[in-house]
Image 1 (cartoon, rainbow, N blue to C red):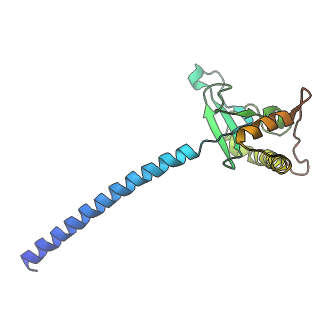
Image 2 (image 1 turned 135 degrees about the horizontal axis):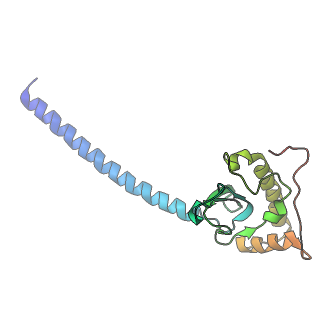
Image 3 (image 1 turned 180 degrees about the vertical axis):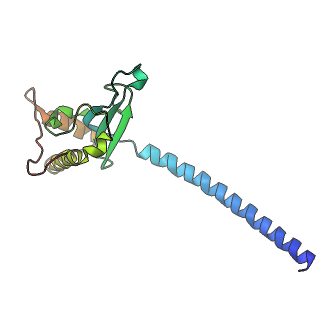
Length: 176
């Protein structure tokens, strides 16, 4: 092979590599922007707390060892979030706390072994399904302008006359 041809080929490859690296850097910058935008949009305006599970191991040394799993349904995002925190009653902003309404579901309040979310996923999904149908009913029967309006309606709907309305699991479906 001719020496000049080889040198020219190497220079072409080097230029192609530099161009590709420049393209990759631009793509990484664009990807970071998209991730930031996603993180901003992925914040629920109305997180609904369904369950809180204490996963603190016996005999914790200090508060850093305390672990609580908060299981939320976010109707504006139509997803379930399981968030671990080190403090009790450390809720997301604008949380509607409906834990009392789901006490009849077989989701433990304490769990030390295993993954509490996945072990109780059937009961959690059943609770979400019931809540979704209640939310759909509210949307169909009332004029709702914002997620905060829905939060007020949910709170009023489930706490009538000073007594909480407890949602019952479907008895034909066995919860784990």
